Length: 386
Image (cartoon, rainbow, N blue to C red):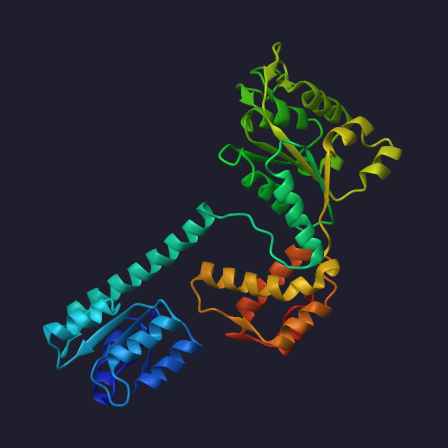
C-alpha cells in the first residue's frame, strides 16, 4: 500500500488531505513543519511527499532541497499563494509537480498515481541497468585480495588457462568472471558449467553437444557448451567432480581445440579459453585416481587460490557495507547502516559459508532491522536460526 507524507503547517489542510488519501487506501503520515518532515524521511520510506511551499522557519523549497539529499522520493509541491514563477522554480528544483490550493481532487489523485508509477519505473530501471552493466569486481583491501587482483590484471589479457581453488562461497566464480571481463574475449560469451550438478551420463552431451537420435531423448541436435562459448570463455566449476571419461575428452579438446558431438562423425574446431575451479585438493584426487594428472597440468597453467573469509577478516566491514548498500538500492529502500560495534561482531563470527553466508546474513539483517543495524541486532539475527 503506497505511503504518503503530508507536510503543511495548517492542521486543517493536513487533516483534509489525510481523510481523502486514507479513503483512497493510502497510508498517510503528516508533519507540521520542514524539520519534522526531514526527520520522518530519515527514519522511513515514502512513495510520495506532498509539501506546502509557504511555511514558517523552513519553506517548502528548502524542504524539497533537503529531501533530495536524503531520498529520491518524488515531491509534489502545494500552495495557496502560488504563481507561475513559484511553480517553475519548484519544478526546476526537482519537484515532481505543483498543485494549487485548494487542490482539485481528481488532479491530486492522478498526480499521486503518476508520481508513484514514475518512482517505481525509476527503481526498476536502475536495478536493470545495474544487472545489465554489472562489472564483476572483487571487494576488499586485504593483502590476500590485493594479490588476487594483481594476478588477475596480469593474467586476464592472455589466453592462459587458470585453475581457481578455494572453499565453497569464497568467490571463485567472481574471479572467473573478472578474468573474462578484463580479457580480449569480454564481448564474447561466458559459459558456466557446474560439473557437480550434471549427472555423469549427461556431462559429455552438455559439454560437447549431441546429434539428433544419438540417444533416446535426443530429439534434435544440440550444440554443447564448448561450441556455445566459441571465441569466449568456458568456466568449468567444480571440475573435481567430473567423471574420468569426461576428463579424458576435455583433455583432448584442450590439446587439439576440436570437439566431436555425441553421436557425431566430424570434428568441430573451437576457440575457447578454459577456466576451471574446484573446492577439492586435486593433488589428493590424483593420488586417489579420481582425477587425471595430465588434465591437472593442462588446466593449472596459472593457479589462483581464493582465501576463506577467516583469512581476510579485515575485509568483513567493507563487504558488509557493500552488500547493505547493494541490497538497499535493489529493494528501493533508504540506505541502512551498520554501527562500528555491529561490524566488530560480524568480524568475530566463524563464517563457514564464507562470502555467500555473509551476504545472506546481511540480507537477513536488512529485512529484520531498522535503519541502523546494531551489535545487538547482529547477536540476535546473524547467528544460525534454531
